[in-house]
Every structure is written in structure tokens, then in C-alpha cells.
Image 1 (cartoon, rainbow, N blue to C red):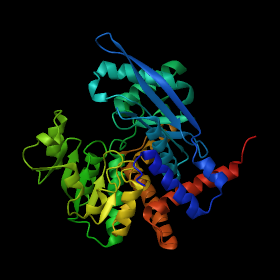
Image 2: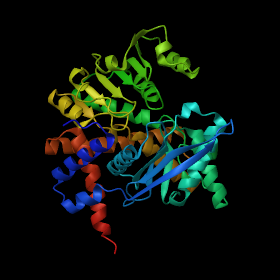
Image 3: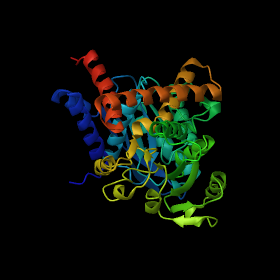
Image 4: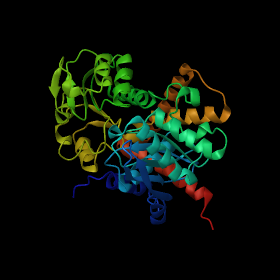
Length: 413
């Protein structure tokens, strides 16, 4: 049977962890059920005056370890199943890196690129108004994700604050610096991917200097991961976006300047054009899937030649793809570890907002590296102790911490 949906993938990973931890069926029922789901209609008055309706979601998967935390996506393919899956993964991710959060996710099924700036603002504010009763700095803290950025977070923060009657910067993270954002937040997920890549190469005894890297995705994760791995001495030999990929290009910054004009990588003329599938199958030391879910599946996994796959995206690998790479001896650093840098620095931002005391960029990066290294060490130790994969170990740690919190808190009433 082929499992391709993000929710089926997430549930399969949870079931595997529950069985390995020998948790009860009652605990499986608890852990596999989201705490709260809100589905909303989001009306938008277009600049033309026409009113259109969009579907919006906010899923709070868990609040056992603290307020729920997770991004807001504006993407046409968003549906409830995907939102639940991503909220579930955020729950284990926060527990794995030992943050006092549960997992959440939200979004609107809309193509953000089709919106004018004024339309985007109106949609963001209306969506925020619709989910207003269940968010807040002690309840649920949204952040940017696919199709959203710091501008959306500024509008969300302002909408919430206007309704509260005073400024509440801690209601969202990923904000502009002048509104209580944190230095280092923009690059944080990519920075964490680079740290994971560095440590994975060390584990395999591969020299970091000159190690070759291919990155699928050139957005907020892929671009910053490329910058970070090159700063460590690795060489990015190929990147791609939704239009296709390119190798043998001039520099990452040259590619960045090209796409900043609104162009896609498929129109970049100075390198060799490749498809996304070709990028996945390049002979490199490291492959970083940093686009959307299910890129590595039962079809694509068999041709991957990388020694290490570091998951920058959420759920980029199906269980079938995972099993194929395991059989072929490819080291996979799972998403809930590899891309946890974003939520770690979001936590730093939230802490800074609560204290009204802000850190320097070096302090943010040092604390990020420290927390990533601790989580990496925890996973490595369990891999060696239980002889399981890195994904299994990461899931077991995250799931066990949430399960322990459930047991300690008990069941009310």
C-alpha cells in the first residue's frame, strides 16, 4: 500500500514511535487526536470590489506542554488533513528540542501570489479576526510559513492588539524587528538545517570543507540553508524552485538577485537547467529537500545518490521513501530535528517579548547552536542505544516527552 498524504505519513510515524515505546492503546488514542480544530470562512473584498470566500484553518494539536505553536500558510493546496499533519509534527518537534510548547498549524487555501498587497493585508486581518478567540501569547502563537512573511505577522499582531486595546507583541513570532521581532529569526530554519548537515557529515566522517550539497527549494528555508552551509565551507552545486532547477551557477547571491526580480530559476541563463527530479538524483554528499511535502517517495527514493538527506521541509519523505533510503544505507536527518531552528528562534523571540529585553545576533546564534546540538546529541544517543533510525529516535524522544506530560497532568475530570 502506498502512503502519500501528509496526515497518513504523520500518523504512520506516530504509530511506529508508540509501538517502539510500548505505549498503551489509550495513549495512542490521546496522542493521535488533535486537541482543537477551527475551520473558518474568510471573505475577501478584492481590489475590484468583488467579494470572494476562502477556507481557513487553525489546528491546535496539543497544549499539554505549553501554549501551542505553529506557522500560518497561504497556499492553494492547503486542506484540513495537511494542517492536522503539520500541527502533529510541530508537537513532536517542540518536545524534541525541549521547548515549552505544543504544536499548532493554520492557514488559508489561497494563492498568495495572486493577491495585491492590500488584498493580502485584508485577508490576513480577516483570518486573524476569525481565529482570534483561540490565539494569544499564552494560548497559541502563530508564525510565518509558506506564503506568509513578517508583513503578515505585523498585520496579525496589530489586529490582535487593536482588539485587546494594547500592544501584544508576543501573540506572533517572525515579526519585523521594530515590532518585537528577534534578530536571526529570518534565517533560523536554514541555520538549523546547516547545523544538522554539519553534524551529520561529522557522524559519517565526511570532510565538511568542500562537501557537495543539492537543495530542492529556494525560499525562506532553502536560500538561508544555502548561505549557511557555504559559510561552513560546503559547496552548493544545485538548487531548484517550483519551476525547475539549475546547477553550475555563479553564486547563491546571484541566484537570489535573479529571483528577487520576480523571475524563477527556470529563466536563469548562466547555469545548466535541470528538473526537480534530476536535482533529487544528483551525485552529491548532501541532499536537502526544502520545498513541500512528499518529494521523496517510493518512486524518487530509489535513485537518490546522496549520502545524507537533511529534511529542510516538513514531511518531505513518505514512509515508503523512508524505507527505501534506509535499505540503501542513506542517513536521513528527519524534519522534526533538521528544521527545528525556526521554532527555536521563535521561542527566543517569544521570551524576549515577554521580558521586553532583546538579544544581540551573536547571542541568538550561539543559543540556537547550543539547543540544536543538545537535541542532536539526544537523538544520536538513542540511535546507538536502540539501533533505530534517526527518524525513529527523534520521534521516540518527542512522543515520549509529550506522553510523559500527559501522564503527569492526568485526565480531567
